Image 1 (cartoon, rainbow, N blue to C red):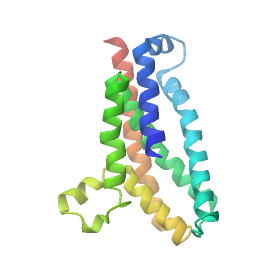
Image 2 (image 1 turned 180 degrees about the horizontal axis):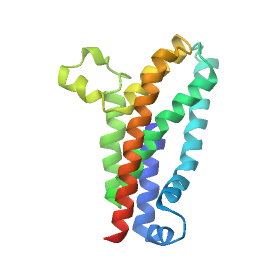
Image 3 (image 1 turned 180 degrees about the vertical axis):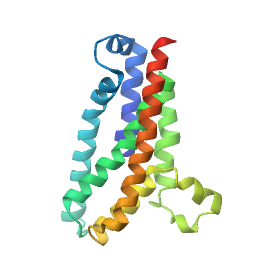
Image 4 (image 1 turned 120 degrees about the horizontal axis):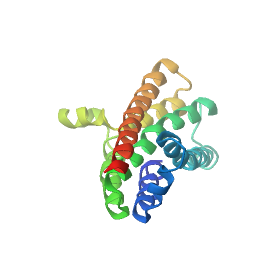
Length: 187
């Protein structure tokens, strides 16, 4: 999911900057927000489809129980895609170069998603400064929410805080990316 959200978005939008087509797109009557959302919708749909495929594989091939609902799973996935896609937009708005965008996406998206999310290493066993750093990683909340949906069910008093934090982080990424895109066209 992080690869689809952050890396692909960063690469595609950075390619638009490299080719000079982003300036042409931004000169159309569409607002910056509409353009950025339009760029993200295919990757949002791809992320939802990927999650559906992975969940079906986990359930039917590996016999992982899904005690929660598909609606909750897809809602949490949608909430995770917001910061992932927003981070990709922010990276491409700053980098404007596919090579740099790929490197930054891997360092700020992919590695933290695996190392600091609780996916590979238990967060409680990490040193205190690293535990504090994990609070900034959207994948931490997604991993926790997935564990809840698959193993405990739709326990919304547990899921809702994770969902809200992912949306908040994503909103910050989108706001900064939008401001940076508007400013960067002027410079």
